[in-house]
Amino acid sequence: MLLMIRENYEEICKVAAQKFADFIRKKPNCVLGLATGSTPLGVYKELIRIYQEENLDFSLVQTFNLDEYVGLPWEHDQSYYYFMKKNLFDHINVHPNSIHIPNGMASDIEQECLEYEKQIIEAGGIDLQILGIGSNGHIAFNEPFSSLGSRTRIKTLTEKTRQDNARFFKSMDEVPKYAITMGVGTIMDSRSVILLASGSNKSWAIKNTVEGPITARVPATIVQIHRHATVLVDRDAASELTDAIKISE
Ligand code: GLP
Image (cartoon, rainbow, N blue to C red; front, side, top):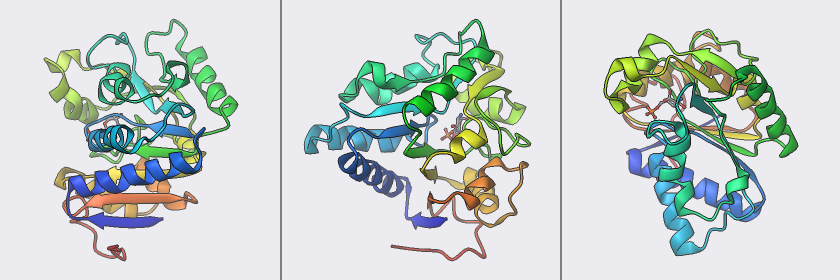
């Protein structure tokens, strides 16, 4: 696992976007794993800039998002589909048929999850996955005590995660209780992962992810045994690290 610590949020976003851009240039028909939440926003902004100013071509790229709320239609402004369109897809030349996001309105959720796994395999697997992290150490919507071998499925959101995400909704009652999420095992099958974290509210999660024992209590700890994982954090998110060798490039 490569730990990279940068001064602030802007810097980690630049580094992550550059890694994505370099990868897309190397493999134009790559399969990207994408994430929502506030953290990747700066990365998407920078990727849009590189697309506009440096001709980065997404026309052959395929994308798979990590997760989606159950019960929110695509046009709901808090659905992850809406988020991705607004913050990335509407601004780049990715082909609409190449975008994959779990359908939280599917009548048969179990079937939807099986299909999603199948689609990832048919696309050749995910090359590069971007991950945020919840303040309790969740990745995608794999909450604490999720099986570390889990596949795409429906998960109940913890109260903590619902509270953390309540800022995007009018009231706590509107925050969905369930989500479809890639499993920890699905994420681990990606050929590379970049986990991003910014701010002191992530310092506990990052301390555990980097220095703690691997445990389902903190699902993100699994990245310690990923073959190509980068943990890219700013100073605040890194502030509780003690033992880890801090690499500053
Ligand atoms: C949600 C998403 C996660 C994301 C997390 C943290 O729970 N499902 O993928 O990592 O939020 O979001 P933020 O980056 O806004 O802190």
